[in-house]
Amino acid sequence: MKKIAMIGTGYVGLVSGTCFADAGNEVTCCDIDQDKIAKLLQGSMPIYEPGLTELVTKNLKKGTLQFTSEIPQAISHAEIIYIAVGTPMTVTGEADLTYIKQVAKTIGEHLNEYKVIVTKSTVPVGTGKLIASIIKEQTDTPFDLVSNPEFLREGVAIKDCLNMERAVIGATSENAWQLIADLHRPFTSKIVKTSVETAELIKYAANAFLATKISFINDIANICERVDADVTKVSEGIGLDSRIGQSFLQAGVGFGGSCFPKDTAALRHISQNVGYNFKLIEAVMETNEQQRVHMVNKLVSALGTLEGKTISVLGLAFKPNTDDVRSSPALDIIPQLVTMGAEVRAYDPIAVSEVKKRLGYQCTYSENLYKTIENADACLVLTDWQQVRQIDLTKVKQIMKQPILVDGRNLFELETMEQLGFTYLSVGRPIVKQASLATKGL
Ligand code: UDX
Image (cartoon, rainbow, N blue to C red; front, side, top):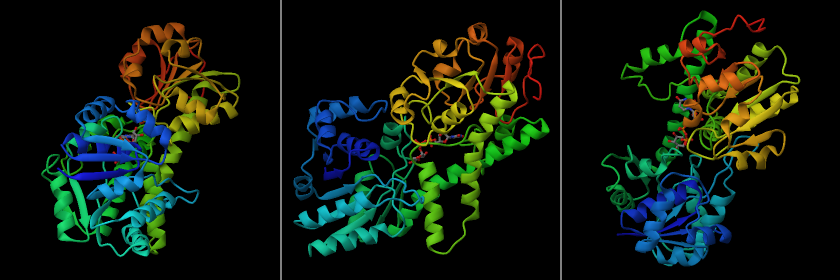
């Protein structure tokens, strides 16, 4: 059992801290946001994550998990201090290290004996050294530094944390490495031992590689559309080669979320800073932006003009099972549709309030799928929610003004759409056209 202080109760800190507590460690999750801490103590989560409330409540009761805004006390009490504060993207695409630097200073001010300090936040290569130098400005107390990046996917974060495919640990001493490796043994047997700098880079390399797979298959999808091929079959055909693998080859509207857009931009920056022109990552980002524009173009080709047309946008979260809308395709696409004169009605089962905060009343919102679709000129699918996947298409066709569906997630079978009489434009698959509709130019 280890005594851990987790500084930052955002997504990563809260999930990781709770899972460490569940494995029997004594964990204090801290945050400067007192309101957040007060809510957490009452069992109210700041994020939507399946299973999190239950696991937090269980460990609060057991006494293995605590929440506090008294960060100095938590630092003094712990033998391991995790830094899990945010590193948002600046306008230039760099990671903003303001919070990291503040926390490093606080740790330095309150370091009362040897401790192991671990970065969990995604930070540019070299940040470990920066943290060490900030701490050393405040104190002569010895410490070790470790980089231990996270690979949690939103929506399945608890599962990912309790059953890690691997843990990556880069440490400044063998003692510190062993301590953090022991902490991870209940979760995984695969532990990669590296230097601090290598661990920092692994996080960016992992996310950039996954983002590259997505942009690659989206580029292939765009070729498929020009040669009448089917990208879902291309994914299957290449993915069964174990060297390629089937995951992350679903063509669609492109990636969003708090990690891929931010981390690809940060990796480009890291490369520029060391004088390397990472052309591939540049192309990955560009393809991703274009994919969003592409969805709007599909609507225009189906409707002729968007002026005065009612468009139902189905799905606002960047992926299902989360209310996270950071860098979500919907945030880019809805304002474009509104600018082009469309009346937009947006549906999402849980992310409506998050989008309202960002887009305000550029469109109307609903948590009722069929109400959103009623009398629409076209539907645009942006998130692969189960509710949308399982929609009653016969009913949809009856209640729409005209049965036009643009699908950014390839949710439906082409044959079904044809039989039901839809005009159906998906990604990287042949267009289903309805002769009865005036969809000239398709
Ligand atoms: C990602 C990484 O998977 C995780 O390891 C890391 O720690 C944080 O970033 P997350 O952002 O939660 O996790 O989402 P993920 O499930 O990876 O999906 C990212 C985006 O890619 C979503 O917008 C999703 O819709 C899109 N995607 C994913 C595709 O478009 N096609 C695919 O085949 C897979």
